[in-house]
Amino acid sequence: MSPAESSFADRLLGRVRLGGLLSLAAPLLAIVFAGLVTSIVLLVTGDPPLETLGTMVDYGVQPRSIVLTLNSATTYYLSALAVAIGFRMNLFNIGVDGQYRLAALVAAAVGGAVVLPAPLHIALVIFVAMVVGAGWASIAGLLRVKRGVSEVISTIMLNAIATALGAWLLHKDRFAVEVSGSNNIGTKPIAESGRVPGMAIIPGTEAKVFGLIVLAIVMGILYYVLLNRTRFGFELRATGRSESAAVASGVNVKKMILLAMILSGAMAGLVGMPQLLGASYSYSLDFPTGLGFTGIAIALLGRNHPVGIAFGALLWAFLDTSSGILQLHEISPEIVIIMQGTIVLSVIIAYELVHRYRVAAGQRRASKELASGTPAQAEGASA
Image (cartoon, rainbow, N blue to C red):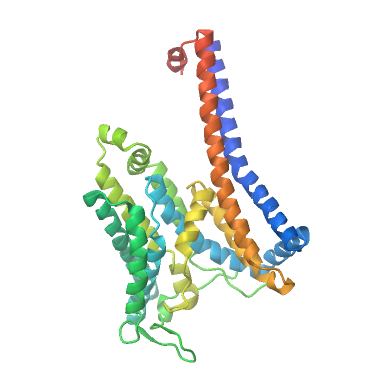
């Protein structure tokens, strides 16, 4: 390797390392900043910050709390992956919330109506959920490619429609039956063959981790491989960066938009499965809601990377679980919502600052090269 090539390689390696450090520092600084803001709020309300945060940590690391955190993180992770698929395509799928709830309702009704051997029964419920989620999301995709309707507007409206449609289907004369001992109504319970047993993997508690945490891990791996190791993933990311450049490269942009929405919806269909097949076994009025909007925040926090999303989901779930102890100490649990919101806002600002720093650094390097008379082509040729 010539001295010029060696110098260029050293500079390139240094830039890569600096970029990695900046990307890692941004969320960490955002979390620290969120802690400071939360501390100020606690001081204003007359609560001791260090004691409050210490209480949350002590409660959050108890065995039962760890199980609750892992279970919540499983659903958060799937929701964030669904959102991230759209983000990588530069699509804002706000409709994950409606997609997963409608998918869970229909899948629960189908699962409660049949009895099959265990693997087939579970596979049928999951398949139905993915199909319903994909089908509901495809409406927004078709509106975008056929009529140019923004997916932001269409998915918001589809969320409202899904809520109303779910309420109509959940009427006791249609999909649902009365739950004995309460005023609740829900679908017919799924038989034992359609349930996924939990795993007692945390010592010190009888509480079990959702068995479908394995599904979440597999989906994370498939997400990474699909987007980073396949031609389809390259075309999807390329279209998200620049539709005009993708068209010039021969990519069918409309087809990619529709497929991205379908994939996002199919992933959204899985969001309710850990709860449905691992805990409730039916879809009722008290089925968890709002997971789709939480997924948006976690996808932003994790920068659409499966590992980053995993850390974001665990952090979010840990804060949710830890908030349960605050009321016993006469501290408003809403302080956790303030912390979560501050983290997301801080991360967005931090990433924007990192992006601007990189752009400015690139401009400075170009200026130095021009001033020194070193043509950029020489480095490019050496590389």
